[in-house]
Length: 569
Image (tube, rainbow, N blue to C red):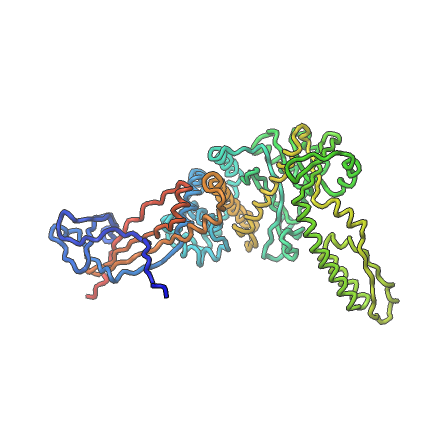
């Protein structure tokens, strides 16, 4: 049987208590005296020690055995948020633009609170108002009271943000250049959608519309979010569009927007195949812009014979390319062994499930109309894999005649399977960068995953969806707050790449969130209370993380002594 052992851990440091009446040993602390409303010196003594005559003016006897810990609240991640906020110079940008209200409400602090909430533990404004603010240390860090998180205050702050969107994007571009030497010559462009818990119909100009839902919530209205980021994931600009906006209609206005905000430099635009049309590419060539885009399957069908005659070139191990100059563009046909394995595995899994379902329906022999419905549902679940199977149906029964159980047959379409296998792991790129190394073009295109990661983080870590606001302007402001939170997150991501590779922003925030802030109450012999507000000492892994980031913890707050005596009269 192993012996029990006790492990002591340093959690809080409160200062020192005088245990001697010798003047040379007397230690004092600065504390806020609520009676005077000012700072004063206090010399602390345990309750079983008398206060020396020379310390009577500022000596206080503390009942050490009766101390209590109150109001534990999350501090570490909130403090990290404030560090990132300061690093991006957000105070310099927002303070002049968000003046206090006539009632004294600091809209600047309300914005900080909303962005911190979105970054650290996102949810609805109602949850921020009712739970999170009280359980976090944001009130302590901002020097504010509970009124900062009043529900109406949070909503009214949103009404003040949107006019500053373009200016903030320009400001952040300069900050990222200063901090990380960021370049904005390569732009990754993509779109996503986010849905609402609100009921149509809306006014004609309202952006909430039914459309193609990337969240698979076709029962909800939505808006489309178009985003441009750098290969490092740094966002350059975004726009909120109507929920029924087609991807292929968005590019011209973003070309205009980028030129309006940042000038008409010769940038490289990287996009997926559903965004640019032939007219858009012609427009980009006329403007002197470069592009690298995915190509629809239909164009691959047209170029397949010409590509078959071309030789493969190694781009990197297990990746090879074919090159086909055509008019003013260069087509790059890419084959990736890793992608072949992935796509083949996914196709086989879907095919086995579809084949098993067909066998099941064959055994059941449902009625003709029921069979058609179940076959349609099975084909929908199988997706493109359903085209690999030929199904032979019996003749439809005459109208009015009672339906009987029917049988059907199915066989594998080997020609279709051969064509699919030939194209698995292969895709076609198109670019007007005809003098660029094809391997470099392929690597450029891989960077498109950064904008996809941005959308994942907005919808995952930052929980931008669903949106419960009913006012369209507040909906856009809600998305703007999420965008600001993402800017802080991607800034932390860049810091981690430089100083602590392998860690993600979410892991860092979760590690630091374990550091709590507590109020330690010591009753005194004269009926008052001495209150220390202290954050817990970091664990070794937290200390290592802070050292890697180069972040030093702030000094602990000064204690305060209560104004009211609680001694019974």
